[in-house]
Image (tube, rainbow, N blue to C red):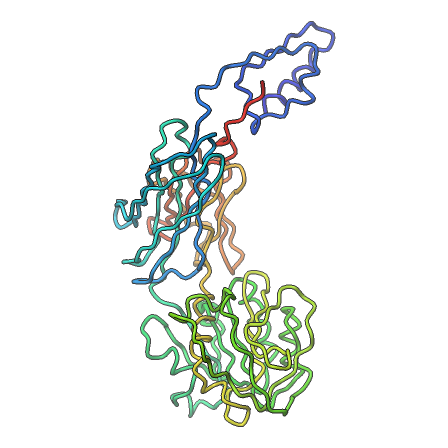
Length: 459
């Protein structure tokens, strides 16, 4: 910015005798001087850096999008040593808090780490979430040399429940019957389960869901397909379980709209599935220990899908033939799961198999959408929250929980989500509470860029 401003000023005083003086420590990450130093009217005045030692918190992250009450959280962080010698006894403290008529955070964990010279170390804290809401965190270290990178702020939300809907092919008279998907979700209070039939679909209700199962529908109407495409585009997840007799065109119209593989026909050759790939992120944490002997589903009938060349489709479970039994396609902000075999006994034992329940539960868990745990000044301009009934008469407020900064942010409501823009209106790292007419509706965390943590200078 300084160099650009000087260039503009120089253009206004052409012919005059101008002497430029730059006073700086000339940190390499902050300046690009290759062209400027050839200017004969420029004098560089070098300030000796106060320190060339620094330990910084480089980044933080979670490996799972699932944040649940009484669930185990594994919080990862990267510590970087910018010094030419090993640093011992680096103490890190983890603080957590939620906003409940005020904000107060308490120490959750503490550890001491050794960081080799000129390198980084990844480590983690494990703890239990004890209450729902938006959790604001702060990771701190004890480095007295450069202070701006001693703190790292992050936030995440713990949903009190997960909303699941199942659309079935049976008539209204059978709506209360017991069936496999209902048995998986209906008895756990964490899941707010809604059972629908093809005759009584409430599209307003569908928008409120996080996970939708199409349970053995013979045909998918064009109206339902359009709503499901919007639902997935906005970040929702759907699972498509076919009936033995389906309208291929209706199924493939939905799949085509979201870039998913299309069914070409029914294969009646008996086969079995492969064993799950326990290294796949989908299966991570499902089993307490990996079973040495694992029974696999027997498949008597399955739909063959066209080979997808799209990199956004991955197999979750394959058949011995190499075809996909269960696949995942990412579409815009959401996910489309396709099951190739109907979950009825005539088609095999997939619906009754021990693997079926944890796979469906994992699909639901992974339907939870979460914002990035933090944003960076100069790189990010805003974040998203879930759709709310909001109009021009409503006022959002973004308040710094540590800094007490307070702004009225701009926002954009596209019907599927609301984008909140902080732009350049905030200045300080910290946790921020988003409220609408005084009620908490979201939260985020902002950190300074770590590029100046590297203490390397021009001579």
